[in-house]
Length: 568
Image 1 (cartoon, helix red, strand yellow):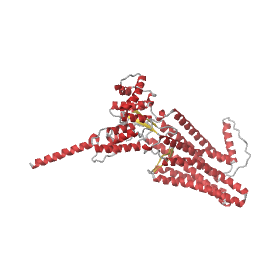
Image 2: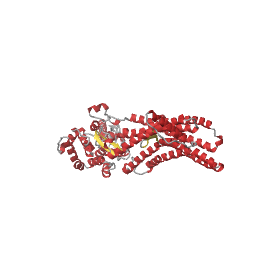
Image 3: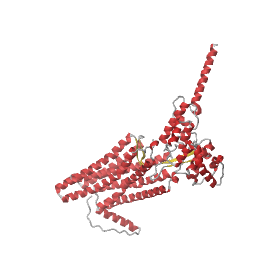
Image 4: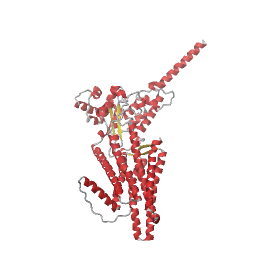
């Protein structure tokens, strides 16, 4: 009797345990504790969770996760709202009221559908019926989803936000689930342009080759196209100008230490013209505006979809272009040449400033041949140091190459990155400014001691390098200002979507773009500065261009130069 009673108690305990466990793991929730994780919640998105405590935890986790990642690829507003609605989340009602992500007409229409289906249909069904009628399909209210799913839509129809959101309705009805079958493109980084945020089912994206450029306003497309042409022209001018500098110095009769530094600066600027500036146009047009949507959820590992299933009409993990591996490789390559060029240019300018300082500080002890020999060795060492610094992201995981100013690739990371910038960039800049100020002070001091004639000679010695430093400083200032604005201005941080100001964001993106262009323009001015400050350089440059133009049968006329060469 006792054994039978004990068995019944064990059985009862077992049944209670099973029931409790089932209620906890219902709808795919396999957690063994009452504390939910985002991975567990993502596995049951779109499904009803019977454990309300677990459901509320998932609501908060999923909502917070989307707020931190809404602007990144694979995080979709349609899916987020549908999930929060299915889980009966308080965050859903809050989002419907505030419309946090209502930056575009598309996202406003997404809110209409998720929060008030009746409002959505009253506003958008006339557009849907008109598009279907244009395609030769006449349907009733009950069958528009099926018709929209099977009709071949023209590109003009896909421009309508109502059609884009209606496609989400259609694919949801056809597939019984939209997860993995509907994808959004969120593009927020085009200068001069408003945010682009559109969505389509996977089949439409593949059939029509959807990319963000198609949804920019005409005026925006025009400005961006002109900007890209200007960048390519700038690249060509930088290449021609710096090759010219090297050829003129190479063909000159005598070489000084300053010529060595000029050649080093020209080599660095040539890298900017060949690699860095063209990468701006490539990044904006090819990577950002002219690539197809990378189909697939933000966490493809949470699904069982495979590329092979794309042949069956499923495109969940079917990545088109560019893959993350290719993008990281491209960014690392451009980052290497960008850092190498900027560091080499700054270090060469620093050495040139020191050279000028030594001339005016102790002119009698300055030996040109010794200074030239030292310059050659110093340039070789500073290029080696620049290469080492440029290779650091390949040797550690704490510092990587990333976008630091819209289209400019540089060191990215945490505290280690700031230290690296301070050592590699800020310290040389401070030394350049300090040596330039010291050079001016010594020049005026010697003028009081040796008279006006010597003052003019020494002033000419420092003026060229002073102009180079000033021009470089002026080109750096906008980039510094834009960086500070991105850190300090409210309404910029995208991880705080409730405070994002679209107009302010667009203004900052445009300013960052222009500041980067101004920064790289510094690589173009040196040839003009040398020509204005050195008559012999100008003569050599004219001779070079005259020879080049004569070979292709184009006359080249210049004014004769009678002025004496200024010391450089």
